[in-house]
Image 1 (spheres, rainbow, N blue to C red):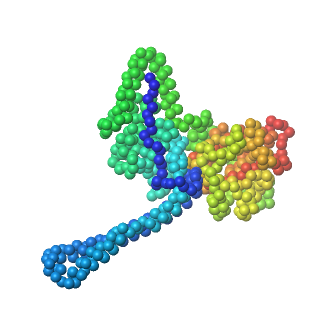
Image 2 (cartoon, helix red, strand yellow; image 1 turned 180 degrees about the horizontal axis):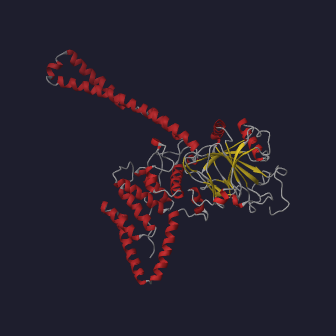
Image 3 (cartoon, rainbow, N blue to C red; image 1 turned 135 degrees about the vertical axis):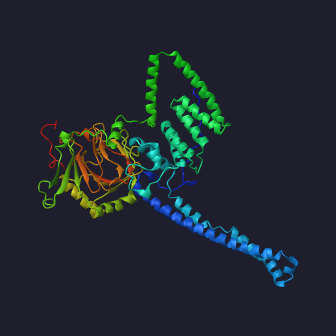
Length: 553
C-alpha cells in the first residue's frame, strides 16, 4: 500500500522577534568571540526597556493620582449636588475640568512612552542573528549530544561536563526550547532526534512547566507520533496518537492517522504470522540496521566518524604503556640556538608516530589578548577548498570563524612568527600568514589533511611555495570541556592548553604526504576555544630539512 504522506504542521519559524529583512552579519553561531558582542547589544536593549517601564509607571502613577482625586471629589459632590454647585467656585471648576482637564488626561493616557525603546530596538535589530543562526545553534546542540553521548535530560538541565564551577552561569532548556530543537530535527528529517526532544518537551510539560509559546501537549504528541512512525515503530506511534485524541478528539489528522496506523499494524501482524522464524530474525536485523541509521539522521555519516567521536570523548586512544615510556618532557634549545641557551623552551612528546610535539608557555596572556583584539573585527566564517572545483566554500563540518594576520600589522605577530622559526628551525617567510580561529557553538572541524594530496595537484599552486610541510597550532585559550585535537588514523588526542603549541610534519622528508596526520578539532562542549595556526610550506626548507637519499624515507 502506498505510504501516506503527512503534511508538515507548519513552516519552521525560529526567531527572537518578528524580524523584517535584516542587515545582520550571518553565522554568529560559528564564533563565540563575536557572539559576546550580542550580549552587550542585549544589555543595551534591557536598559532601554527598563527606561520604558519607568516612563510607563510614572505615567500610570499620574493617572492613578488623578483618578483618586476625582473619586474623592465625586463622592463629596454627589452627597448634595445642588448645594455643591451652589458654590460658584465649584461650578467654575466643574466647567474647567470637563472642558480642559479631562482633555489633558486623555492626552496623557494616549501619550506613547514606547517610542524611544521601539526606535532603539529597530536600530539594534539590524545586527541581530537570523533564522539560520538559531537553526545552526540548534544543530550544534544536537551534534554535541551525539558526539559526547549526552542524555537529553542532562542537556535540558544544563549540567554538562565541565560546568560544575559555573554556578549561576548555567542555564536550562525550557519546554519551548526542547520543542524548538525537536522542530529543527524534524525539518532535517531527523526523526530520531525529533523523538528525543519532543519526548523531553512532553516530560517537562507533564511535570508542570508552563510553556511560553506554542508548545502544547497536542502539538508535541502530533510530532511524536509521526516521528516514531517514520522510524518504523507502529505500536508506539499508535499509542501516542491515542493519547493525542484523548486531549483533542476532533483532531482531524490524528483521527486519520489512527485508522491508518491500525490498518498498517494489522497488516504487519498478519505478515509476521505467515513468515518463518528465520525470516523473522532476518527482518529484525534489517529493522535494527535501519534504526541505527535513523539515529544519525543526517545522511552524511562518515566511515571514520565513530572513531572521531570516540577520541573526542577520550575513548579509543591507542597509546600502549611501552610506547608511553619512551615519551619525555625536556628543555629544548634547538642545537644551542642563541635565544634558547639561557632560557630553553619546554618541549613534550605528545605522540610518537607521527611525532607530535608540544611546546609549553610559548606566548604570554598579554600577547594572546593582542592577537585576539587584532583578529576579532576581521573574523569571517571559515571555509574549505572544494576538492572538485577548488572553490573556497563554507561547510557544515567546519564551525568556526577565522582571520589572517600579517607580520607587518603589529609587532606581536612578527614576534610570534619569529618564535615559530626559532623553535622549529624552518623558514617561515614562505609560510602562510598567521591564521586566528575562534570556534562557535559546538565548534568543530571534522577529519581532514592539512597538506595537498596527489589528487589535488593545484591545491597551493597560486602560492608558489610548494606543499604544507608542517603545521604549528597554538592554543590561545583553555577549554572547559571538549575541543581536543584528535588524529583519527593513529588514535591520538591532544587537549587544548592556553599558551602552548603543538607541532608536526605533514610530509615525510621525501616530500610524500604523511597520511597518519589526518586530524580533527572536536566540538567545543563548554568554553570558548581560540587557536592560531601557521602552515609552513616546502619552499625555503631545502637546507633546513634535507631530502633523504632514499625516496622511501
